[in-house]
Amino acid sequence: MKIKNIIKYLFSKVEKKNKNGCQLWKGYTIKGYGVIIINKHKLMVHRLVYENINGKIPHKTIIRRTCNNKLCCNINHMKILTDEERFWQYVDKSNINKCHPWLGFINPTGYSMFSLNRESVRAHRVVYELYTGKKIPKGMDVLHSCINSPSCCNPKHLRIGTDLDNAIDRKNQGRCAHLHGEKNDNSKLSDKQRKRICKLFKNNMSYEEIGKKYNVHITTIRKIVKNNAVSVGYKI
View 1 (cartoon, rainbow, N blue to C red):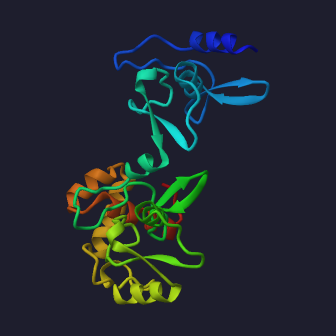
View 2 (view 1 turned 120 degrees about the horizontal axis):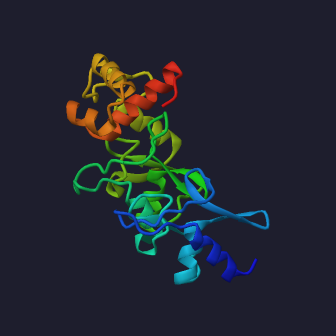
View 3 (view 1 turned 30 degrees about the horizontal axis):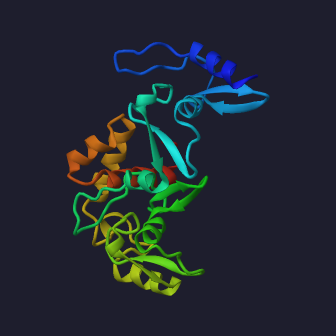
């Protein structure tokens, strides 16, 4: 099929602007994204729309919809983001002199994770390389000097060290594996409050609402809920 015919077909499946200015795809979808299949190849509709108007999408970039609608094909709602720009969207840098909490996915062990080149990597390692412009030496760790680790992404709180250095830090900061909940001196919440938080989440209260209720950051709430999910075996 010629590109001209592909584009003609594509726009025949896109509705006119709605009240939000979106032009929504009405054809086949995969995981919420508009897709067309040509010669057994699955092509993302919004990428075809962008390239038809602006040319080839630059390497190591993604298209982010400013309207947050995966089906939107309005070129004015599309913004090119580099990996670095995409990364910093998930970091709360509102307090320059303190920790910069990660707002994205946090794994069950408390580490902030970021998708890079189709791999899931620890966000604080990405921060270190972005800030210093240097690759992390083979076999070395990136350590946190703050108590809020391992979710903090403030580059001034990071340094290179060995596994032994990391273990010593965990012990000195009271982050040893056996210290959970109110047994950890750094905990702001009691075990009773943590159980209540998990119950509120199961009753459809959002991370943001729970965070405001207990006056703690949403990353803390998310971590409590995810750790509880792993321990009791339910899905969130």
